[in-house]
Image 1: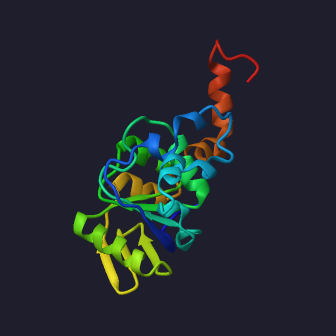
Image 2 (image 1 turned 90 degrees about the vertical axis):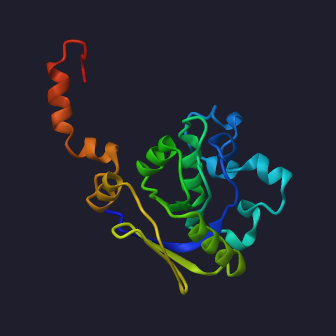
Image 3 (image 1 turned 45 degrees about the vertical axis):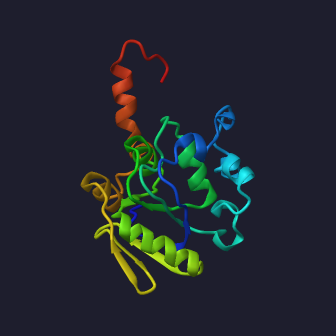
Length: 194
């Protein structure tokens, strides 16, 4: 499945250096599957701040997260983007991202667009003032539109191309040519019964 456009209402999340420990607290990493992680996104922050955007009914159902600098920094836990995706986030627009977080998000089909600080500020303010605004992010061009506001975002070329050519999901790519996997495994002396 190619991913060329992501569109929907957005959620503005202000703050720099929001790390994966805050996105998904460590006590939820014990799960055997990722099921139910969406319930725990920013759980500790939401408990201490009842007006946290992820608790605000105005942003329920948002598909695009608008973040600030170095979003997803910290540990490399995949649980953070898994929780966000399961919450409903289909794309993130931010000033910058941790490379590991961006990679983990990309293989889930969640593009992470970067844009300059002033543009992010404008977009966050617009969404705070008009939560029903539909935001559209174009993977090919990086253009992000929200009502009358248009900002320029970017994706790394390899990531952009992977979304546009259906090469973003390594698991589906592997399964699509599983006969080659079996053939390679059959040649390996240490893989028996595969």
